[in-house]
Amino acid sequence: MNGENELPLYTFLKSQKGFAGFQDHQYRELLEKMFSAADPDWASKPDIKWNFTKFVIDRKGNVVARFEPTADIADVEACVKTLL
Image (cartoon, rainbow, N blue to C red; front, top):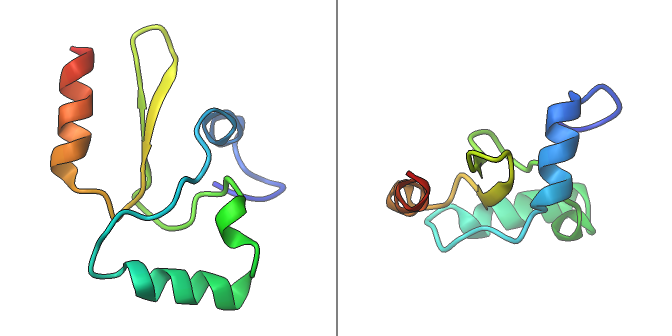
């Protein structure tokens, strides 16, 4: 997903929708502390931070949304429904 051996798909997805922060969640503070300890500049990088990051793509191939693992699945579902 990240780094020199990442698949071109992930390079494209991240170029279209970069990291915009974690949503309010019980693990948000823990995740932010963990990433800050490893890389002080982590929040400004488009890298996929954690498993289960989701990208929503429309029928024309446009990346319309990126949801971090802290996102409520109801928000993901609502986004997908708008594209059906």
